[in-house]
Image (cartoon, rainbow, N blue to C red; front, side, top):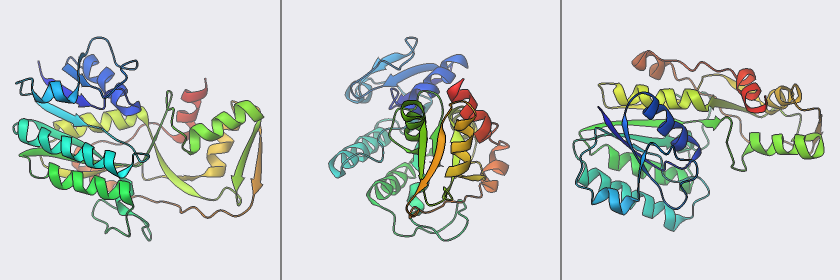
Length: 269
């Protein structure tokens, strides 16, 4: 039986990944920071400190710790812990969850090899994490775009407008809702993590669908399931993002399966 460690197991992606690994007969250790309420009870629960002292040598480590809201000190702590994992488990394959934020404010369509344009603090911490991971014998780096699906609890765009539709029967968008983003459904993100774990090469992958949709389109999909109006105000100042993950698709023989329409339906029905 293959053994897998999921660091950040109580998060949105982490908890879903633990479930899928268990379903595929992995022996799973779920590493948590504070809460454990979303973690499958079939997983072994450990803190980072306990895992690093465990003396075990897992086959795979999925490192999903941290988010864009973390302060500088927390991001430093996360990368320090990652460094200790890289030293303690040199023979494990590290699957590191990075972010498309590393590209900063790109011009045009982003590929796996696109340059960085003024990445922010969180993105810089992800690039530092990638640097650490590349010291290992076996690794996969996944730069994920916007993940969504049932159970998402952060304050990002999709859960925010769903909450507004439910509580106010209204979604308010800036400009004409023209800003576009690439959204990857949680099940597809989990499948990508597993595909990267099983790939033979050490590579950096782009976790996106290659299809960007507007804020207005997302709102209209929500409107199909929640009676609400869509209103517009002010000017849209946010940047649109476009990705071309064909290199990732070819390397893994994998593609996302869930469209934005299907994904929103799964969230709301």
